[in-house]
Image (tube, rainbow, N blue to C red; front, side):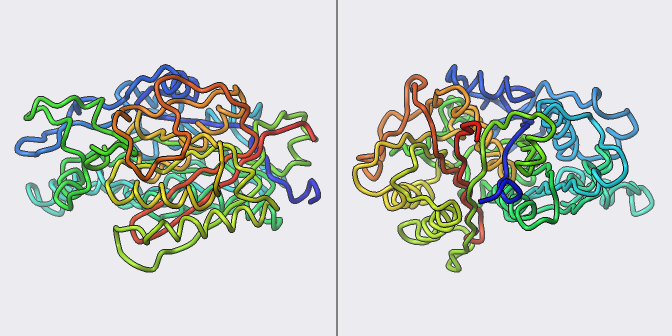
Length: 424
């Protein structure tokens, strides 16, 4: 494959319950810290779930003016902050100069629920005070593509711009589609990933009433929030809702090398499939996930036996984790020593941002030669037998080829395949 078709990661940006920035995320994951805690600032009276992963200390004032902060939803604040960090870490200026270089910059940033908080808050205003009191910024703040659009405005990116929307597979699809866009020549650079800020009482009630959320950390039962997200554990009882953003700066290899950038990793494959079965339950055996991974492997010219690390979707739901365990067995094949980890055990489920944050954790593992542990795995699901799930402490490992899974309601599956950058 020519350098004009190869795509590398040169920058990363994150907002998560472990803190703002990639360093805070990675340091927290390696230390085995949990970002799941009792939720602050929300009226959850009468609700069974009162805990989650909240970006408590996030302040957008260093990247946005007060008027911008007021008119934009929190999910867009996250995206702009993460995009700014990705640009800075890639050694690029905060804004692209107008002209040919700007026209080659894409912004593909998605969200599962978009500005849900703005929407519900304004619905309450409508009910209590009438139509005349609705904010004129309601629609532009709430629509799901606004993170991508606002990032493009903020950084001066004049290339393709849209928001992927595929529930919890969103960031995986956004990164994968940006990769394909660069490969086919529609962009040379892309800010791609996902963002989510939907910690609102109505959304929490909705997920809880469909029996999707863990209740084991609720204050009413004296539970421990930090122990509620239990991917692959036999005692798992649902996911922990969270918020954050994960954005990658992707570049065509020749463009990155020409400006003297040092790639963090190479994105070598992407696959996307649909289960076409059920709105929430995965296909038996994780067959859709298997097909997505095999599509990514085919594009990379690799086999499942070559994968040495998997960042699992692993939401801590009974059926979802079971299907993914079966899928991982199938993808890797017999006798694999590949490490497996679940980032959501520490930060909860950031929904549309999950694939972006999982990708960042994976690239950090490649860079540092350490895989972060999966928390709260005390009674492994029998279906995990034979898999090398990292627990307890970080595992020292040279990660050369890694798979990042991200799946969403509706039976939507994405698979990203990253390779260690070897300087060639």
